[in-house]
Amino acid sequence: MTEKNEYYSEEKHGLHEYFELGDFSLVSDEVLLGARIAYKTAGVLNEAKDNAVLFPHMWSGTSASMESFVGSDRPLDPSKYFIIFPGQFANGFSTSPSNAATPQSGGNFPNIMIGDDVIAQHRLVTEKFGISQLQLVTGWSMGAEQTYEWAVRYPDMVKRAVPIAGTAKTTPHNYIFVRSHENAIKSDPAWAGGLYSKSSDVHVGLQRHAETWSVMGLCSDFYKQEIWREIGFDSLEGFLTGFWGAYFAPMDPNNLIWMGWKWRHGDVSLNTENDLDVALSSIKAKVTAVAFSNDMFFPPTDIAAEVNKIPNAQYEEIESLWAHFAMFCMNDRDKNAIDDVYRRVLAS
Image (cartoon, rainbow, N blue to C red; front, top):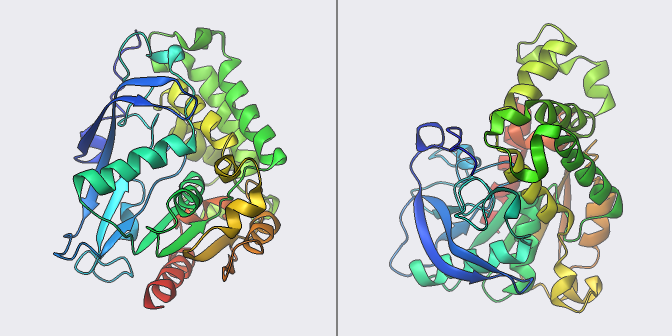
């Protein structure tokens, strides 16, 4: 069994709460034993229970990842909204390869789907909090995939939806990329089919993965203009090691792989007999889909093409050389642009 990875600790990510799901039936008809989802909240649920916002997180993240978008001076104001940050399966806090009990630990973890996350989140929202309508569901990247799944699976519950830098169905190009960074980890012999004893044993695979990620995660002009200097790095190699390498090094390889499998199989049309047009046309939420310019994971053209299939949806594009990772808000311009979207949507 893999040793406990201290990266997934509340000392690093803050206090979580947990919602027990029991033996949880998956979309695949497999069963996730003793399942639970970790979550965090900000603000207070009002008596009418009509001030709730759901903010699922991205691949590689945790429930803490999107907390920085909440504040008394921000559109997501906890004095006004009750904001729930659910942790997706395989994130290291919710049931994951790194913490599941035998026989589903490590490389024996079952394949999970975006639908599994959303069904679990729905149970949290309805059973734990008694919420029947969400003012807003929003998320970035895989959080956007979950946002679309919510809007299709539970159309009467979602009033507004803001998927950011993500699509309702993973494109073939995106699928290939995600599989390639999974395979970069698996190329390390220490991965051992997911049955390694310590996450750090797979450090070569994690480094290869970080290098692969650095190519598609940003854009050519980011590197040509040496934008990494703006955040304190004085060389390209220093940035690759100190930013990307350092980000992934402490994480659990299996968690990343199983979240990646879920990402590349994201597809809301699984709810409508593989008809994406029917799935997107069924959305009742007011959708504002946001793309980041230069994003090679989820190119603006892919996002815009889906928006055209959603009734009364709007498309917005934010210019940033941080490309897909504009959501990291490494400068005030990106942060303000994202906040402006939330401010307009919540005022509508």
